[in-house]
Length: 198
Image (cartoon, one colour):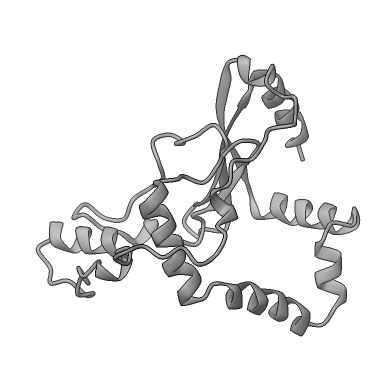
């Protein structure tokens, strides 16, 4: 968001609030590269789902709008049906904090250096076979970027980059509603649309 906001400030002839940090040397691979850890995030995933026929169908891209009331209904349904949220709600806050802390501790400088070196040597991309990427931009402040003609009414991508991507965007003046953008094979989209009638 800093780049987009700085772009808006430049367009309006204002000084930059955040000074750009242009030194990218921290992201350079070591010379010679030194791969110290296995990098399973780049391993090819075998698609055993047998859903290949689905992707022979025409893909449909849709946007689903959820008011705050709809979001509360979905959360309630998830808690009642025994999803992982129940475990988080029944245990003390320290349990959730511990899970986050454990995940953060895994991402050390040496692991990241090794990953950069691995990418430099292999030029691998993470496998997207049998994978759904769910990303949320709902907390990003796109709505406050001003290029000189006021705040945007709506912001988001023109399209989704892959068929396996679902994108959550905030919507409305108060940013409490959510737009979900996704692409699915036609038959799956029909079922998904029926399920989203809440």
